[in-house]
Image (spheres, rainbow, N blue to C red):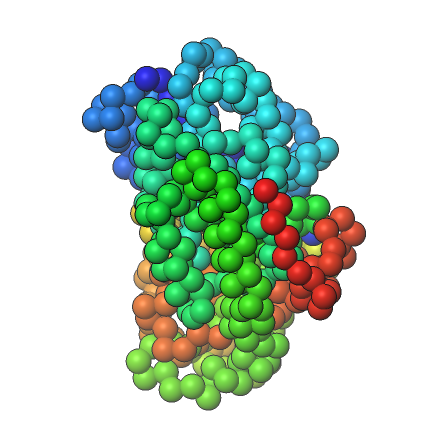
Length: 491
Ligand SMILES: [Zn+2]
């Protein structure tokens, strides 16, 4: 048995001012065949990672293709997407014949001329491998689950947890289902239900926490193979954007359709209750400052300026408010400002300088902050943890403006691991308040030390006030933009 695997992934925020080029991939993640690290997967290469570990015991030969990932931002250029696509397709062609194909993708990749890069990729893969080859795909739940891609793949499995700490177990399940399909033990049949809505579904709190358990409760019994709740990615103006339910039954189309519809309707019934309150930043700050932080810092998350959703991570609204209030023992991280970090590296710890911070990428970044700063610490070429994975953050610099610590970096990213502080010799739990530029993934690293968590609205292309996005191409009606939006069984 021969299985080919490759990865091509990013999450495209079509409202982001930051372009995504081939360099965006080559400087982020670009492993050519055999180059993938042996000790850990990245967000979208878990299928390769688990297949490599299980190839010998399961009796298949794994042929590795290239793996590409870029930090979320605006649409990928056409030449970048087509270049990576053709590289992978050429590798697949050379590997033929194969019994299976495992693809690690994100699912919300948009390129110039391609609303559904994953659907396009699968169409070309299917054309090469033929109708009987089994194609399995692992996707992020923040994807656009188009009927096209569901029709072309044999089985698609999404992560269930948000933060995405379950990339490995979902990849294990995908591989198991693909192998069983190749061996003729199962016959996956897809059903897809469109919930007609967009929302935020962090699985660290209810009701989403229980819904993860509910999805799992159906899997592996009574003819149901897999249940993926597709959260959707609201920051993309493409027709298939939205929350969907994907169910695979073992050959029983009617049974899968009933369950997909039932679970989709359960999500519809939760409208307005899946997301924690999205407060104005000043209101979140009032609550955080009034909170008892004896057991750890209060945390205010900034989803609107989350680099993990394609934002610049250099908006200064929160920083300006902290400085204006004259607060002490508070910190903001990570603020993307390669130029300011370079200046801090040049003068070194202990130096004082007048620094211009943030506000550089676009009008959504706000005005820069000009302030007298003390450089607390600098560190080159650092990483942060996210579950099993490690993500590069580039060079780090911490400066103090009065009682406000600002942690800046050179590799645009969201707050994931506590290394943003500890790599600089700072203890994040010693602060009264941390303002973290992230929507939800910060919870994996910072949730355990937080006394309180608040979600706030600042400014940026990953705003959770969806009505402020200039959508023109998404399918309507869609809740909460349109109160009347209802659900539909698509497949
Ligand atoms: Zn995601």
